[in-house]
Image (cartoon, rainbow over all chains, first blue to last red; front, side, top):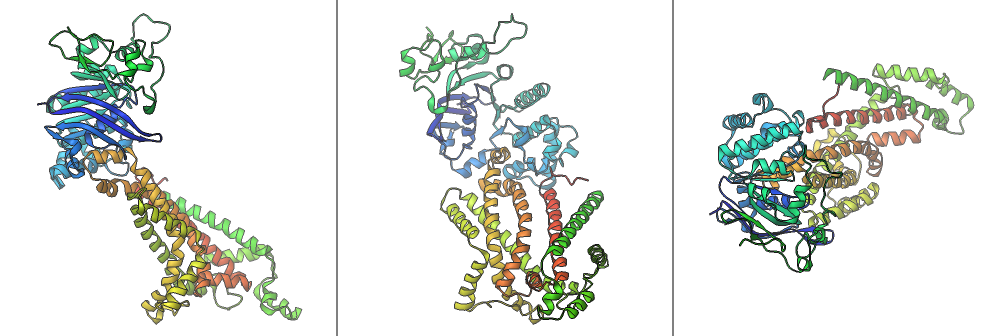
Length: 325
Length: 315
């Protein structure tokens, strides 16, 4: 059985124009120790998907479907039970290391919190563990940094602290929501390398959310491409990257500039812009921007279907892609 | 730190000197001759002239200003024209009433505002929130003096629990003094509570949306634990700011409240002094008020640095 199994997850958010579905029937699985990347533009529902795994959706949001962690449906748990899972079995790191740490508390205190909460560590034992964690995430001079305030650290160092917090209770799953987006390019590589290394060493599962295809390609075994709240294509990373099937995935990849490639006059783009949640097409959410769209795309929600050669894992939801023979 | 203090002290001196010049000039142009007011319009010119001489009013303004300031450095504020006692002594006696009143009002308002603000924020958009906001709206709308009169009617006249006004003096016993200050303190704290409650509530709501609060929740902290452990301290900064500003409102508020409750405090002192053209008292009390406001701002700056480590005490 998969460690995490998300089935037909739909999340509706309160907007000024009523409830709008930010996530529409998303399903995926994560094996113990597996790595999954979720790719898509901003607003495609990837962060909301991650937050719903923690039960930390914005006020007024409504999630339906199933999110099973080791067979327990997280959506049916009460707040207290979710608190025991958050930071303990599922931990998360966020995009903005600059604002994700409390500015008025010392680093040490912020790392101790989950240790005390989930592992009952206090005093010298907790202190020792904090030092070990800071050392593990490669923060130089942990003994001094433990008393630093977040504003005294650089962006990369803060993200290391965030990772130390996430790591503190040896979670089964690490959710990383654009963990390197706000960082300098050189630091991005270091942080990504650290996450990779930690995942390999500890055997925890990783869900990496990014709009950066390069980051995804280097890091994860499986990829899900999201558009308009729905997963439009998913599969093994190599398979998917080599045989892009869904028109949106193709557009997304074509829009990445390639250094060295013969330079076209213009960078390729996907025509149109991402519509507001409430304005998404009713059936296939990509219909209004898709060059291949026909009548059926506006009438019928495309089903996820396996494609590609037998023995490979690759699925897409498009009326215009031929299924496997 | 010592550089910071030295600098702050310099700022204090400059601000207070500026205030002293303004106060002095304003009183110079104020119509009404103290000697004439004290003796009455029927007094003979010779008597008035003699009194002017006695009060030193015949000397040129710059000399009188210099005298005043030099006196302050010696810890003297001169003699009250009316009471013929040192102004320092007058202020000292009156502060025994005004300080407990002002500090009491600040403490009551802060405690009430923090509790109500937290309660409203945690019940955002629910009945409790609307109730607190309604109360705060009312508190802002009701004039202090009128609220004071209502309290007198209820607690002094109808229920007879508390005295309607006056102050027996601390030598009559702490409890009697406290009893006579209760209604004034509540009256003075009403509008302060109303304002600070709003600031506390909106500040908490704003901080609760910050990324680091989401981090705290992602660690497994409950909503309540995140509020107490992460939101509150960050939310305090705007409350401190407004609290500092409100101290000046308290200082001027005592003037009204002490008149409503017939309390022999500094506010009453300056009110009477202005009516009697007791300029020696007026200028010193006003300067004292100015100094208090500057000192409070200084204290607020230090509190900022204690609450938020990003705010460094700048040398």
